[in-house]
Length: 305
Picture 1 (tube, helix red, strand yellow):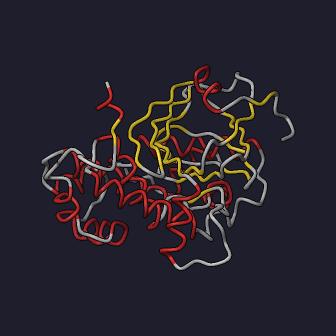
Picture 2: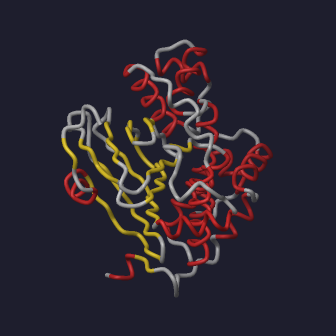
């Protein structure tokens, strides 16, 4: 890749630029919590995916150049990479980023592909990014739940769903082929970080456009071109992702959670949540009420200490 200073192995790179913690391992895949501490003054090093990776972005913003294309992932999106493909990241702030990674073996993806009845495609991913959407928001929440602890059945279900979404993704990079200026990309990343911390506020188009220093119409076009989604979609999926976390980890009333994450109407929250997660808030919470540690098929890294 042009502009890359040097190539490093995946694990060597993260020993020097952040941390890579194994969360769990099962036949066909391993799950990592990856934290990057690189900033705008650090050199851009080329890395190589050690496996077929689906990464849920749970913190920070950055730009990535990959064999599949360039992307600006935001929190709640899924980043895809094929084994042995190269990638290079750059950051516009010193805060780095954080991802929950599913690293799949080729055999596991072939099994998923066969279960889906897919022919003539192979195990390779075809797109670099699945932006926050009805498809990705529930998957990103499932990946975050892995860190909190899930039983074996839930983990296996999440792995299959995540692999299936990555293999069948066709709409992920619709707008990523069109180039945007560096200034516009930095403005979009700045607004994406604003949404991540102000999602519970109105976050109107006019307000977000002002944060970017653009007219509303121009901002809407640029934001969609850079991230693959509209600002409204990003705000909505961010609210739902935070609501899902609250449902998993607290006993707060559903109506209280809906209002605190930015929904002015509980019925709208219930309908939006069911549309994205395929179950209502109450049923979703019930999945995590009876927590049980895995006994077979999966080894959690914390059990090895």
